[in-house]
Structure formats: C-alpha cells, structure tokens
Amino acid sequence: MDPLTAKPHYPYPSGPIRGQPTVNPRRRLAPLLESSQLVPLPNPLPPNLNRKCAFTPTHTVSVHVLPAAFPRAPSTPGQVELPPAESFKSKDDRKKFINNLVQKLVWEKQQLESGSPDPSIKQEVSEVGLWNTALRIRRNESTVDGGSNAKGITLIAAHPIGFHKEIFEPIFKRLIEQTEQPSSTIRIEEIWSIEGISHGDAALINGRHLPRIPDRSDYGRDIANFLIHYLPEGTDAFGKDLPLTLGRVSEAISSARVKNGYPDRHVVAFGHSLGGDASAMCGIHYPKLFSAIVLSETTLFPAVFNLSRVGPALSLGAMGRRSSWPSRAEARDTLSKSLRTLDPACIDVYVQYGLVEDPQTGVVSLKCTPEREAVEYMSRRIMNETWELLPTLDESIPLRWVMGGRDDASALVGGPEASRITVWRRPRNTSNVKIPGGGHLVVQERPKEVGEDLALFLTSLFGSSPSEKSKL
Image 1 (spheres, rainbow, N blue to C red):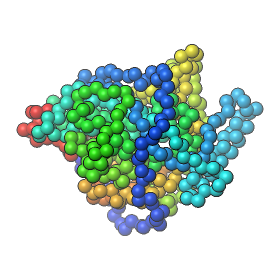
Image 2: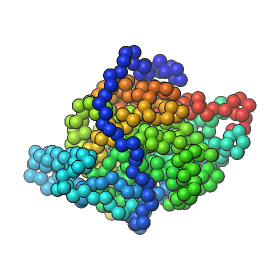
Image 3: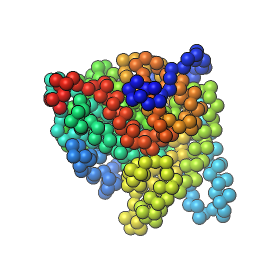
Image 4: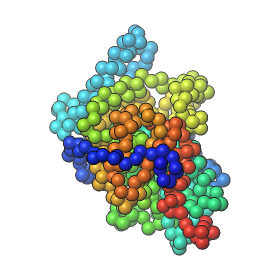
C-alpha cells in the first residue's frame, strides 16, 4: 500500500530489472529564443480570453496569453485538412482516405525524427512565433509574508492530447477546498494550466500558423519557456491581477531561475498523459525550476516495446471523430455517451471550454480539431528518450506518480508491468498511488480523488508546524 494514502500502489520490482537498449537520447533541448515576429492576435479575441471571475470563495480565475517556445521543431509544410464527410461517395471511401492520410503522415513524422529525412518531405521551421494560452487561479489574499511563509505553492498543470487548460478545474476546486480547511497547514497561492499550441483557445489564436506535424518535445519546452521567461515574480503576482498578455521577465531573472530556482515560490509540476511526458522532460532538463513533480499516466515507454501500431490506431480514431454539433446541448448529449467514463464535472468543462460556437449559426465545433488531435499521436522518439532519461531526474525533487487502478489503465504503454517499471525508473524520493476505478484518464474519471491526493502530497512536503499554522 502507498504509505501516504493507504491506497494500492505499484510495489518496487522484486527481481532485477532487465536493461534496455539505448536510443542515444538528446541531452539538451533546443534553446528558448525570443521570436521577432508573432502570430497577430485576432480581433475580436476568443470570448474565453476575457474570462475573469470568482473560482471559489478564496480564489479568482483568469485567462492569459504568452509567446510559445521558439523556435519549434521542424515540420513538413502545409496543413492537414480532412474533406467534409458529405464529399465522399461512401463511408468506405472516407475510411480509405483517412487510412491513406494517416499512413502518409506517419511516414512524414518518421522521416522528421530520423535525423536524415528524405529530401522530398521539404521540412521547414517557421519564423513566426506562436502563442500559448494559460488559465490562472490565484488566491485573493496572499499568505506569503517573507518570513516563515516565504514561498507560495504554485502548481503548473499540463493537459493530455485532445483536452485543454480548463479540463483540470474539478481537480483544482477539490484541491483548494481541501487546502482551505481550517485544519490544513498549506494554502495554494497560484495555479497555472498551460495550454498546448493546437488545443483550446491557443488553437483558435494560432490557426493556420500551426505546424502540420508538431513535436511533443515542444510542449515540454513551452512549460520551460513559461517558467523561465514569463511566470511573474511572486511579489508582482501573489494576490494581484495580471494583464492578458504576460510580459517577459529580465534576462537576469531568467538566468537566476535556471541556476537557482525561485526565491518566492514552491513550483510543483502536475502533468497528465502528454502533459506528464512534457513535465517530466522539463524537469529532467531544468531541475532547479521545480520543488516537486507529479506525473499521471504518462505515455513514456522504452524503445524495445513494440508499440508501433498504437499511435497510428489512435490517429485513425481521432481523424474519424465527429467534430461539430448543431448546438452545445446536443454536443453534451453525444459527448456524455462517448466520454461516459469521465466524471460529469469534467464533461461539463469539456463541453463549455473545449468547443467553440459559431455566433451566426449556433453550431459548436471542437477547438482541437480531429486533424490536430490525430497528428499529436505520431511522435515516438521523445517518449523513448524521456523514459530512458528518467533516472537522471534530480533525486532532490520529490516525484509522485498518480496512476489508474484498472488493469487497462496502462494499455497504451505495454500493460501494468510496464507501468510498474516506469514509476520506479528513478527509485529514490519517489512514491506512487493507484486510484481505484481509474483508467488512463484517471485525472478526468476520478477528479476528487486526484485532488485529494495532490493535497496530501503537497501537505507532506510543505505543511507548516502547528505554531506556524496560525499564521495562514
């Protein structure tokens, strides 16, 4: 049992762990530069970017934009566009078209990852900088006083493929509810949920400037870019409003963060699936930024595992997915069935914030289109590289794994034994829990339980003594 929660967990493997062939992982990420040209922000902005309101009685929510990591990984030129279903003579014709398209895209991605791609793919790196969007939840009254409470807990969340920055809101509410209890010895100063460039509101802003085939490593670089260059100093942020567009901090502050971390923050990463991969990668390459890391159901696995069919199968499923509905109400009826394992609160935020409405027709469509979701599943190299590098994550960083308790939760990465090996890749200062009834989407299926686990873990790290508690 997990000592922190008394819930099931993956015990440390009893026998020797078989070594795996190396993939010769890259030891450094691409540099984080400042783009001289950014995608113009649309006018008017997507309605959700104007959101600012009470999130709980103690916290306020707002939405912000910031330049994404630059440059991006090379891509093939153009856009992936699927013709309307009615343009095909039959369902079989559409299915054949999608199958051929996915095969072509998989080949293009393999070439991009090969290091010596076929010249015919004409890889390119855009000179135009993209945007990330970020959800911010901040405590109305800061508890940071420069004395015994010198650092505020700041949670940095990263979402899975096909979801968006708001998908964690039910967890955040449970976490805040738990930590605002009179008996709690911690408080949450800030939560930032970073949205990938092709998801949610970021997808609406970046539009046709998005790369044809993105690379997963760039989401990890987006997190690093935010933490190093755009997360405001605590004195400028705690208990205060911030502008829509986040400003870049000075180079002196950025350099100090990379070398020494933050003088006024406990930064904790919380990543799920793709977001977990990105958070782990960021932590490996920029360890001083983090006071702790929480990973849930990552898709990291060793190259020796024969999972070459998993990505294309997921791409085929995504590409054929329905993407629009006559109304938001009808969308919810349909999605409640296809997403039936999710907690109702997570379905609500998916329908509210994952869809965009045409103001003239009322038709709602996925912000992350089927084509955009499909191409995200085609990366493989960075998952193998990050899995291999997990043992190099600084042992001073507490690492928590929040896993699904069902046997099928780890099907994407080779099964329960594969997950067991992965969560113990870095054995020191590591713990894990299996949330009963949760699958790969445990974060959306069991948000209350995940929020409670986060509260327990953070309290075990940063909880004050009884004498200090009275100052909260």
